[in-house]
Length: 143
Image 1: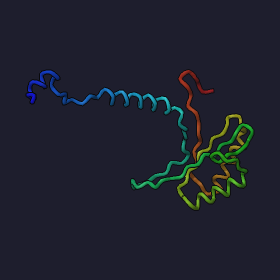
Image 2: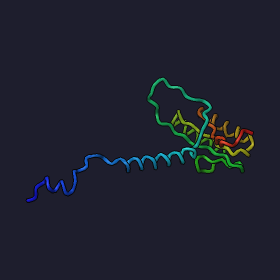
Image 3: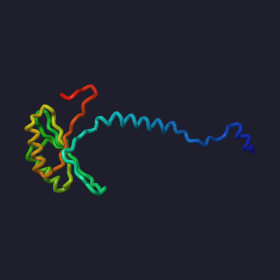
Image 4: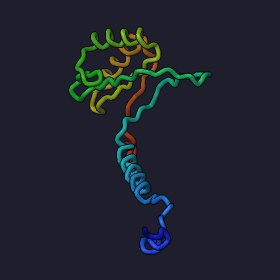
């Protein structure tokens, strides 16, 4: 039999420290991923912010209504007419009274078209309407 002290001298003492280098590497990679993807997220400016005295916030349903340059209206990724949009939003309001809608319109769309869509959202009874905008870049200035 070998003496355990002699084998420890040959192999060296056992390391009891945790190597944190791989953990730090993973955290830095995740940080870089979040820094790159954060600006790509949708940004909305809520017109009417709800107030709550309790901290129990129910999950809310948020849909995006988009208006393209050609005045085509989308509800998430489905093409809809104004009449169909109103019916769908009324059904959403019945299911979830705290539903929120984000309106995303191309800057070339006439203001009247945007107002018509906003009017349909309000007629459906949905009070929480947010406008989706893009922030100015560091070298851009407001026109």
